[in-house]
Length: 402
Image (cartoon, rainbow, N blue to C red; front, side):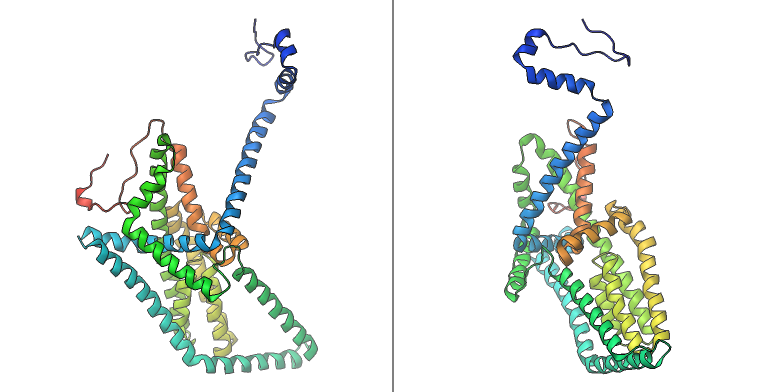
């Protein structure tokens, strides 16, 4: 007969003598569990689940590292597909044949990127001799100031500090370039990755619906509806991220490039192009590329113009960090700016430049998928709208809502 315990709850019946003799270990475990505080039981239940998740995540990361020559091109292709997806679907909605939409989207994208890079490289190559000469001249003036100025440093001390600074920069560069997911250290690896990325991109644009249906069929039948809906929501978020990040990068490039032009800093156009490409790594990219503008302002225009160039770079970064990222990116991918900074830093520590580049879209995808699955009602709710999704090829005018 069961009764109430001291806390008013229902007391569990004690095991009988026969059960205790048959399963002594189970009886002891039951007695110990009954005497544990409720808070400790909840904590341990969460703890072992976190351990399982951590082990699974560690195994997944190890598998990704082993397959890095496949994973990085796949992620590059997905990110590029998300970037050109709005224009590609616009062509499809206007009844452009799919093969022609693929050709226009892919060739147009590579033409724009290649043209910007060619313009930057062309101007840098024209001014390279002057930049090198002015840099050497500025370094010599700095050495002379350190020796004859109020610091009264010796040549040996200056050489030692320069050597330490150069070693530090080399270490940081190696840390970024030798990430665990780096495409490869040889030209062959890079070329193979580029060809593989292009092939995957064409497959996504040509038969994204078939690829996704195949992926969904890999899951048990009862889970396919949830997987389908979560994948659609995640892909829509990645598309929104790529579109928003392009807007943020453009604003960064215009701000820093225009500031360099107005201050009379040379190579303003290459600076803007590099900021545009580097800004796809949130927060970090624009700062690193903006440092180039500060360096050119210092060696060409002197410390006063360099100071104002620093103000411009910091101002653009404050605009991105406090206005663009919270309002545009935060609402687009539902990830807090603090989380963006942390995942970018963690991605760079784990996988170098590729990790910093893919950290935010991966985090946004996981976040949206987790929220979708946790809020989905039993029995299934209406799937998300197919607008702007990879398997959606039906014109908007023909679509029906559930």
